[in-house]
Length: 264
Ligand SMILES: NC(=O)c1ccc[n+]([C@@H]2O[C@H](COP(=O)([O-])OP(=O)(O)OC[C@H]3O[C@@H](n4cnc5c(N)ncnc54)[C@H](OP(=O)(O)O)[C@@H]3O)[C@@H](O)[C@H]2O)c1
Figure 1 (cartoon, protein in one colour):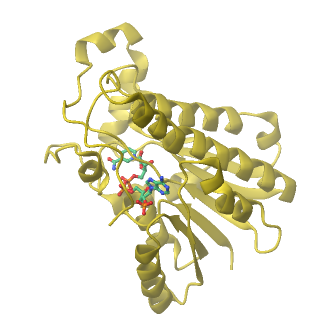
Figure 2: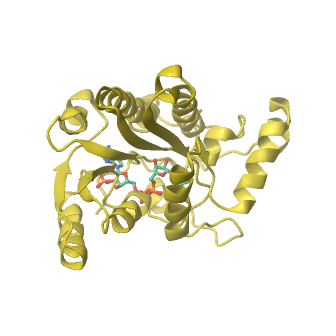
Figure 3: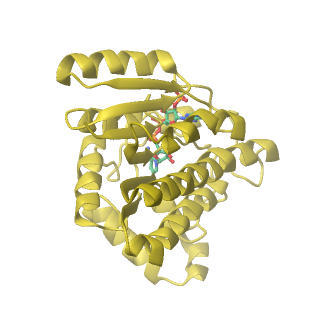
């Protein structure tokens, strides 16, 4: 059975990838909360007979990423699908948050994701095949509309993914890479960031999001933006000049909740 490795599998989008991939893949699930990953392992093994490996890791430091990097480059039982999903955010703006907290977000959302992605690209090129889904955000497509390094970090992941996808090395290979750019998805993300969950038009169901992402990967897309309304929004924000951001840019809240701990 092919193997899929998923970071951020203890919650939200990563957990849903685990559920949808479980019938067809053996899984390596990565997060800090290994108790939650253990529960998911029990559930998925019982439902589909899936072989699930739990890998506890904090991706915010190079040392914490080491076991994941080792698993991505292992030659026996190689990873054929990598879902690069672990991430976090803040409800408050970069102009007021402690700089160290902002650097932490950059480490988790950009440095770790690109470290994993580039490592997986090279390992898959050496083997001749494999697929990568890098989870970015519609914020990574948008011009500068929020006072935050969240947009900076997701834009870096999107840019890296496109650069790899269009490289001669990947175009001449059976290695696929795709950026997934969700809009608002109802997961624990907002609660953990301290962002109020608005029940407005914007929510995309997490199971629909993941189904569309996997279909887009099969179609060979480089950027997946599930849902028509976020496709339209992305088209508009890509088309408008960056200076228009001043008209619709917004400030985040004032009360910085600090770095979110492991999913509880
Ligand atoms: N939800 C949205 O509206 C939305 C929109 C656009 C993009 N995204 C992106 O989608 C990705 C997943 O978000 P989500 O909505 O599924 O959020 P979530 O429900 O809060 O899940 C976040 C996952 O990341 C893991 N994680 C966070 N910090 C980590 C660390 N330092 N080390 C290891 N794992 C860590 C968490 O596991 P532990 O706490 O157990 O470590 C958890 O499994 C993120 O990259 C986010 O930027 C989300």
